[in-house]
Image (tube, rainbow, N blue to C red; front, side, top):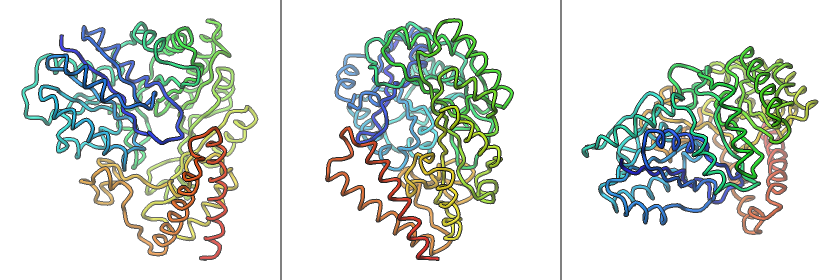
Length: 450
């Protein structure tokens, strides 16, 4: 069979993000190997090193190779995505018989751009593949993309031997290993590409298979930090209670409790006291919840997000008591924002805890992803990746405020970078200080302008 090469690109070369072992890449590699394909993995996101030179050398040794590129970081939509696409396009021109498929959330967001890039033949997701290249596709190519889609739909079981081999040779003690526990999401937020992961809604993996993956990580690497990269670990309140309780029981029976810490994404309405106590016992130390806006009108009518703020505040307080860090994703800047709304939301962000919002406030801006309901609402159906945050604010004063805030942030980041504080051991303290300084500047500026 034709050799398949799997690549997770280096989207964040100058980033404070932690190194993450791409678990989705390992799952796809396992499915392909089970189907009989020779597989090679290049996880550049974890190593922060460009894989292209080594990859090009190996591709030249194979007749009609297939390249699967995991485009999984929607945060890279505006800038880094274009660089990666250009690099892949250069390889595609160098090796004419190479066939390239993009998969992942970012691939879906770039659906209108990839066909004209010259670097990709198709994109694939859980529902199948869409081929836009006019070149003839071999039977191996068709079979490999079919296996890829089955893996993304959760219909292929993990090959733990593949996972163990990769972990043993590439993973360090400071790395975070990502694994998945479910597919899809039952929410239908208007701005989100993640809830299109599985068109049929939300589908869980068995708890035993999740425990198998956890055990494989701990037995075959020095890593002890595991991130569930699901859009929604639980599915519903009852299911989250059941799944966390079952995982706690299985890990205890295998003597694995206390050997790893976990992070996960959970919808606010799924959280309860029972599930949080189980999470604490399992070793969950970080939960990411999508808040998006304290403004109920914006949250419900613009973003399509149903959320009980009173319930969320109770869960935040309980997490604090259990020593679980709860982070809240937020969209402060969007086309409908106004100065009065900004002032009120910044006040509420300070009250719930600035440390809970992981983004810089000026970077907490709506990304208009092609194909999402909010893109259609704003007339952005044919938007390119580099234009994802170039919408117009409907209130001119909001536009002026954003420009002022953005200039302040750019100046501060330039000074910090020139001082060499973004890459040393003090970089996280530098970022924390920057977030607090930014909050002070927002409060001062909004007070002056209103």
